[in-house]
Length: 605
Image (cartoon, rainbow, N blue to C red):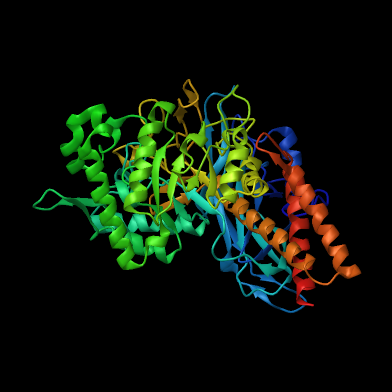
């Protein structure tokens, strides 16, 4: 089974009982009251040192190695990875495709007692493990496109100073098909460069050129994790350091694309979609233009009357018109969409319809995206991309999508796109919070396929400094700031009617000194996005084979596909009902991969 350790006895234990190793699957995550080993864990981690994983070409799989210092402190622990070799053919997957990360655990409050949750993935360097403590290592394997199908073997060697080395034996099965470079699912993530909840430019001070290079580094990092759509448009429509606005002699507004074009070119080259509507509208008018000095100066005096002013309509039309014309000249317009409004209350629907009509008039060939969780039928004809919440506030029954599922399915049949997104809604709906099971991160791609949707979104990946009511991770003195001090994952969300702590909310990536540092959650979300591609391949290849001349062999393969697809639908039954056992989900993923391989072979005959 993918990612599951075998248990051949106490072979991971040294004669001096100095330290133990164990290999575990990629969905193991346990909150701990401290980082010390219990007596039961000490015995448990004197366990298996073999692990089996599997992946398609151009795909990933991961596992964990746990280093338990039971007998004495481990000093200067080094890790060595080998190439993965097909012993039958001698073909290799180079060791550079095996990435090692030392896991940092993050302390959360609100549990009794407070707990530590493994999440931060530091690129590997030598480390110590105090006596009686446990150190997880995250191992991610990428299978290059040209790799031949087969079974590949390698090792992860753990070598503490003054103690004998131990190894974890790795078996990788490479399936005989490939995942596409471009993910078919719209993966719609917020990435903030400018507001007080990220403090991006405070974490990364320096010249504009240096800061710009760091923004681009983050964009590439997100794309490497199969994030292909920018949600709120901080980089493309809101950040005045990137998106400047100018006024001509007649008072007409337009964008200055001098600083913006390098970002747009990068996004287009990576195949990413992006919002061009400035700004995305919130529930009150006063926040509309607060980020841009020119607009704030021109419209700040209007207050809540801004929406109803002809000056406002004129400014929005001029800015959008200049953006569309520029993108059309560059050939980049196909990557754009207009994110018109975010989570409006019912009282704002008339204004929302008016803004959607304005966007359509100015840019008829740019789709309009709306996030309206209640009574979306009131916006029918005014939106081209629908993006309701996957979840719902506690006590309100079905999720926002489920409640209006018939409506969204009708709009999808009419040619609209339908995405959904996660925010702060808690169980029974899945979420990507720090203290939630990792299977929540993995099942979302499966649920998105199960519901037949076009996109999966998350409100933001870098809420590093949510302020007085939450964390304050930015400290002017670097010595007082993470990673020199513990990370504070506190995030308070009041969307649910009362403030509640959503630990790690909006924090899928961490501000490392040299650039982005991934979370375990983001790695598992990437796996979930790749799972969506597996399911899409399984469904489409089965449909293609069903159109071929019927033979007993083909019928046998198709019946197997039907059984597996039925099992997937049971595993991802509804937004409030999905498989909770990570081992069972990964075992089903293995069946999916083997079945796609069988279909691929059958279609070649």
